[in-house]
Length: 253
Image 1 (tube, one colour):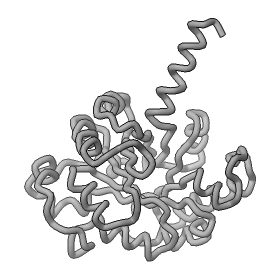
Image 2 (tube, helix red, strand yellow):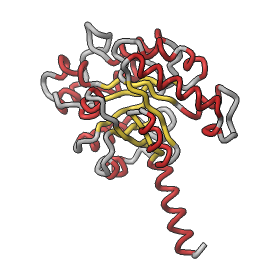
Image 3 (cartoon, helix red, strand yellow):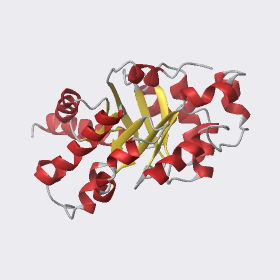
Image 4 (spheres, rainbow, N blue to C red):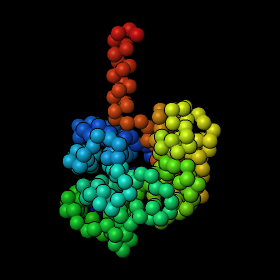
């Protein structure tokens, strides 16, 4: 089976950077996969991404050294199975609240005896090699999202679940759970303390902490702090920002 280069870097203690794909365009996926990101998350939870576009986006990314990861809509066996059967090399599971839910995510992503993933999906085997059913358990990245203040309180038990590779802070939902929606929550000391608590829990258990950052500057700061799975913005936001800046420049505004 082909090597998961992101997992290899993480297992060596290195940091990785990525971005969100929300538009659902295979062309955008192909372009962004050639920009130097370690990984790209194809967002089927909030993005405008259907199954067919997810499938093609995965394949476009697999043509490069970038790792395709799918954020599934929920912690559901069928959703995780279908995402991985496309050939995706990782999953990101939203709104994991405790260790039991984290263990379920791992179980759904792993073939027996380590999990309960159904053996099938010939496409993944064609893409990754005949040994895929045997080797996939060691090459599929499992990331779970901690994005509620109650989950932050259980961060250490979530991190301790065997098979969880990354705990990823969902900043917006975390803020919402703290009553901070509509405020500059990234500047809020309580929100910052919650994010720090997840990082500390990951470090104590030997796991990787990740975070979705709003700006490149924040991403650089989070890398300095010890986050090793850092996302900056999304395809849609980069497109919108770049075009707005170009239009303003042309208009002399």
